[in-house]
Structures are given as C-alpha cells and as structure tokens.
Image 1 (cartoon, rainbow, N blue to C red):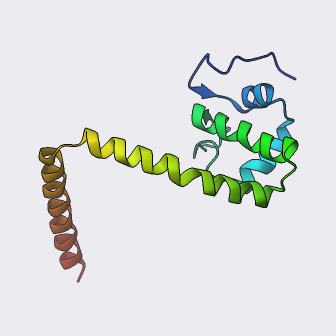
Image 2: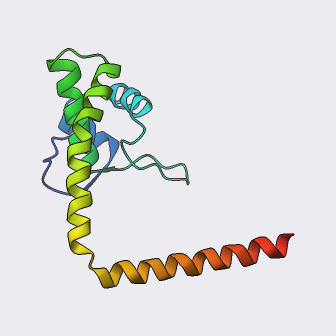
Length: 126
C-alpha cells in the first residue's frame, strides 16, 4: 500500500491516499463509489476521482459500518441516510443564520431576473 497519509494534512485526497488512510484495497473503494455515488468528485476529463475531507470521513464511516458493525452495503447506506438529516439540517440552519434579509431579497431579485431571461429565450424559440 502507498505511504501512510495523515488525515489532517490536506482537504483534497487522491484515491490511493484514501485507500492508505482507510486501509482498504482500491477495488473496495471503487465498489463503495458504485454503491455511494456521492463519494468523491469525478472529473469530466477522464482523470481519477478526488476526495474531499467529508468524503474521507464518509469512507471511514462506511468501513466501520461494514467491517466493524458487520452491515451490508445496503444497510450501511440506510444507516448513513438516517445519520445525514441531522447534519444537513444543522448546515441549513447555519446558512440561514449567515444570510440576512438583505441577501435573501437580492437573491430573490436575481432569481426573478433569471426567470425573465428564461421566458424571453423561450419566446424566441417559438
């Protein structure tokens, strides 16, 4: 396996680094990518996937669920879905706190402008 990579070193990882940190073989990581498509960021140019720190944390959680807790990949997916809403709600609340009323009204204006452009373009096609 590749050299030992410290999890805290960077925010972006290559597949070989994820395998080294998680101590799994590349074929295991590829099978998890197929089962959990939200893991990693694929590039359209054909280069290999890259992994963010959140992806690495998810890979480590999947490893725990599968190898330690003995769950199947399907059961691990269901467990992760149960765990996800709490963290997603916390992120949405934090975002709401960051956005003020002024930002919301500006975004609403932008959205209306984009809809108007879309209607103009749709009218030109007809």
